Image (cartoon, rainbow, N blue to C red; front, side, top):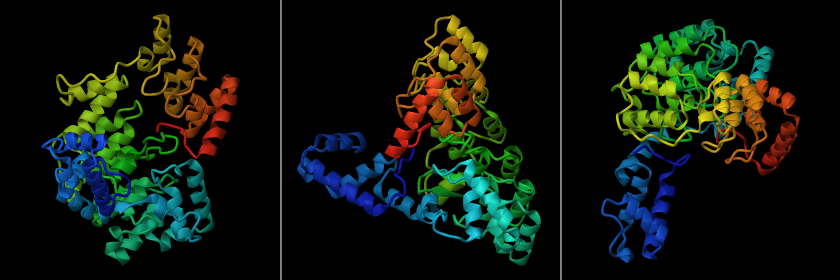
Length: 442
């Protein structure tokens, strides 16, 4: 079972949850008894009033994917030093130090703060303080300044591995999570690796079980979409460098972040370097147990591909022997959601497909807007799809999804071609902002 901890997990909080569960079971609460029945190896207790705290702790541990309470406690102890909360550590708004602000603004944080405006502000600060790379190693890494990095490492070999900057990262992470123009990120990463940087460098985002590694930063993307969290401009070269230097190809978070789109180039590269086969499992060793096993990691990829009609991805995984026979078929995918090109949309419409079918809470137009696929949006509109439909998750239109994902071309197209949709999306945007909720993938 994959680990499923809450953000910034705390042992004392989980201990209190176990005490609450114990009291609820002793009071005969039906939901508490059902939780025990699902996770206690012995099932629901015969005598609820004698349900012990140790039994409650076991249920809490197993409900989060751990075999026992001691294993949960050991994981949290190991994870504490590897955990970083970018929301808490972000100095923007609390500091005027450009050496802290530049890396913070330039790098992906995987929060709703990621967007091009931050990267542009980092560039402005760099222009105002051009000596920063020479005086600060995190800034030198952020801008891929090889000469500055070489000077830092020559003066202090430990500078290549010491955790620095606003997020307390190793310098390598600033190179690969940066999204501002860089001088030579590949040479910068190579220099740091030559000086002892760990190709499996990473951190636990808000203490969650799946590490955000250097590879994760290279591949980019995620739930907020490629407009907010794009892949590194030189992702392939950087990924090959890291993998050649020994990075584990079974990168759970990188695979998760990239599974929402249609492009499989990341998957092809990882498969060529051993994805799905036993590897170092270095993060499992650091955390006492992996966040999910290799089998669970692959199963999630197969399920997502099947549930979302990603037939090319399934075929790629099958060619590498990673689609088990008889695995669950997943949700039935409406024909229109399988249409990946304008010609496919037209063919589906001619065959009588429901153009506004909802799958995974969204229409095909929502997904096309999220991915920034203007050609597909045009074909859907021409075929008669309702581009003003609202999704079942956020209650917003495809235009809102395009705006949230910073897919500017798709948003502009929708605004120009579907005026009433733009008016509806503006109203939805205002309502969402009032409620304090973001749009998007979820």
